[in-house]
Image 1: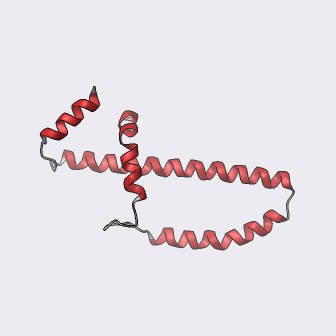
Image 2: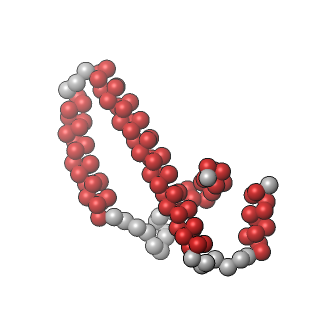
Image 3: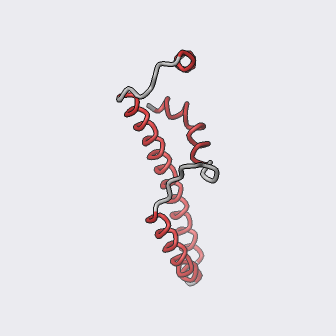
Length: 111
């Protein structure tokens, strides 16, 4: 399945980043609330960081960067997995008609 991911990742990323002009865009209230809480906590975080030694600040910053990177890639994985699962479900339900052009593209990808 990683081959599928590598083949489709660019297209999925384009879809994911095109949120402004999309007719259907999912925005969760929980996400909005969590973002507001994060911004409130950010002020206290910055004040607390000023009170600790530089080496501790560096360690904390490195950890937060690593955690943010991990969460980004985990979010990407979940997004891609959801797309693939949706496509497989629709295919299993017979929602896709056979298309000669698509079959030719798939044959090229499989080579």
